[in-house]
Structures are given as C-alpha cells and as structure tokens.
Amino acid sequence: MEEIVVESLLRGSREAQIEAAIELSNLSRKQRQKVSERDIISPLLSMLQSQDSLTIEVSLSALLSLAFGSERNKVRIVKAGAVQMLLEILQSETKMVIVELAMAFLLILSSCNRNKTKIASTKLIQLLVGLIGLDQLTVQAKLDGIATLHNLSTLQQIVPLVVSSGAPYALLQMINSCDKSSELAEKASSLLENIVHHSPESISGIGGAIEVLVEAIEEGSGQCKEHAVGILLGVCSFDRETNRGMILREGVMPGLLQVSVDGTRRGKEMARELLLLLRDCSGYVIKDKQSKIEIVEQIMREIDQEGERIPGTMLKLVEEMISKLST
Image (tube, rainbow, N blue to C red):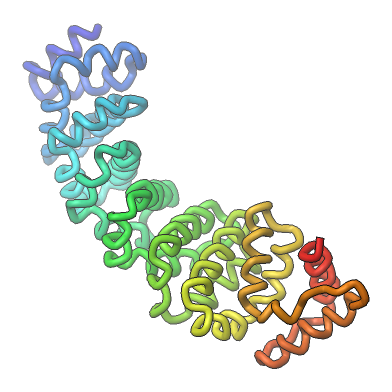
C-alpha cells in the first residue's frame, strides 16, 4: 500500500494524487514515516497551489499527518516552501474547512523551534492577528491561531513582531467580547500575559485595557483570572507610578482580593504581590499588639484616598488576605 501511495503522488494523475493523499492520511504513523523518506512532500505541496478545493483539502490533511509527531518532517515541509503557500491560502480561501486545516497545520509547524524564525520572517504573524479577530472564524481556528502566536512568541526576538502586528489590541478585544470563562478567553489572556512579560509597555497605550482585565479578574475562569492578574502585575511592576492609580480607579480590589484568597496557586501568589504594589505596604508591618481590625482600617483608609470603596462584604476577604500575608 505504501508503494502505491508513493507512486501515485510522484507520477500519478491528479485524481490518483487525491486518492493517494487520502490514503496517506489513513496510514499508521510508522507507515507515514516510511513514505516520508520518498520525496512525497514536494508533490503534496504542489497540490496546495491547485484551484480545486478538494485537492487543497486532502493535501493539507496529508501534510498535517506527516508533520504530526515528526520534528524532521516539520523542518522538511517548511524548507520546501509550505509557509508561503499557507500564507496565500489563508489570504484568499473562504471555505472554512480549508481555513481550519491550514490553521491547524501552521500550529503544528510552529511548534518546532527550528521553524519559528522562518515563519516569523513572513507576513503570517500580521495575518494571524487579523484572522483571530474575525467573527466568521470558528472557535477552533481562533484557538489554533492564538496557539501559533504563542509558540512563536516563546522566542523573545519575535515578540516585537507580534506586538507591532497589533496582537495586544486584538487579544484585548477578544477577551472583552467573548465569555470570560471560555477556553478562548483563557488562551487569549495567556498569550497576552506572555507578551506583557517580554514587553510590559505593549498595552499601555490601549484605551480601556485595564478595564477589560479587571472584568476578566471578576468574571473569568480560574485560569483567565490568573492570567489577567499576571498582566496587571507586569504592567504595574514596569511603571508603578503611572499604572497604580489607573488600576485602582478601575475597581480592581474586590476581584483581586477574591483571587488572593481562592484563586489558583499561581494566581494567589501574583494577586498578593500585586496588592503589595498597589499600596505602600511599608506601613502595613503587622506588629504583635496591632489587631487585624486596625490593619483593615488602615487599608480601607488608603483605598478611600484613591477614590475607591470596597463593599462591606469584602471585609472578610481583606482579613483573610492579611492573615495569609502575615504567616
């Protein structure tokens, strides 16, 4: 069967190539690795340039199956020119099944460190940022696009390209518009946190950014809250004087205190660190004779001075936070 697949791809008619590509996708992993040594990547890539949707679809599926689990094949495929072909497909294709396959294929290729610089050297980053913001794109395609950007941004030298492409704004828009407890919000906030870690000034000029993140802390899933806190911590650590008041004025305290008590382990740690940044904690040294009520009142006075009020129902959370900080 492997020999028939190879012969059909190398020397068969277009119909025979389509059948071979379908059969290739159904082969076992061991069989796929064997046939990949027979120079079948080139004919599969040439099929991507067809005007026929079925030809493009089956060749994408076959190439994806070759790349899956094989770093060697991922590198071979990119060296053979797949990235530019994927760029052209994503720029012009309207059939959603092909767009989804192309996004999934790009995600797999971007997981290989040796491919990241090559992918980033094209216009694909800018294209992906535009695509993930489209309403007509499926959730899975958006998740794959975000994951691809995340893979690329693990190389610090690529982060400026991701930032200049408008990714921070697009991600904030996505977090703002989608269900804060959804996987989409989690992945978008995770990527944004990674970007801010390397480029903390990247969201400073985006209007409404702090408000979106505060809402994510209040309404998001545990992971979304964790990432939103991490973003605000990065922003505040970078420029406390400028950002401290802005964060407080957006009403972050109730949600932040909640995360500091019952968030994820990492979320709790970052929330407490951010709480310390949001106020001058040098005055909060807990002495043996100083009661928790006095500390609570001291915190509340400073919050009042910032123009923010915490409802009475949050007092217990404040006490719990102080108790945990003092241990």
